[in-house]
Amino acid sequence: MSLSIRNQIAGTVTDIAHGEVMATVKVRLDGGHDLTAAITLESVKDLGLAEGSAVRALMKATEVALATERVRGLSIRNQLPGTVSSVALGGAMATVTVTVEGGALTAAVTRDAVTDLGLTAGSPVVVLIKSTEVSLANA
Image (cartoon, rainbow, N blue to C red; front, side, top):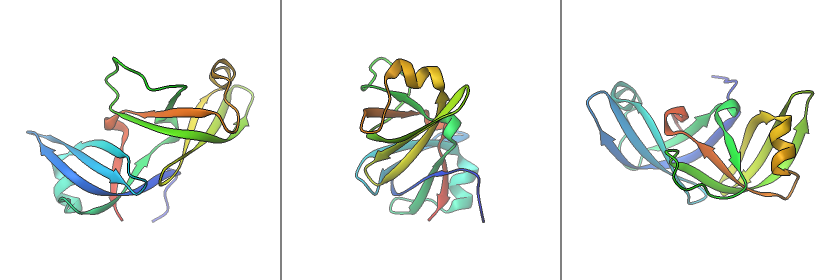
């Protein structure tokens, strides 16, 4: 199956917290960082997820935000440190590719954000992703 979601990072399920309808699934990425995905219980069952399951975490580039340092006092649980590897500027928008341990992630952000944050190749950044915006697939 081909997907338009370019952000795909491999990892292993380390914990699943079941709720009434949703579950939070903790994934240890191959680079060693942890990521949390909030998915339906039906998806947990359909994917056959359990501790030790190999998965791919998928995130749309439009759901990836960037900061120049870790952010405190924020509900976003997924904060991955990385380094900007490339910036492609368009008229109004830009894509910023960030190397993180275990792979690379692309963020679609405004051109103004790139300028305001001073993002260039080599810039240290923190990738921010809400757990509800992380999808999982079997590896």
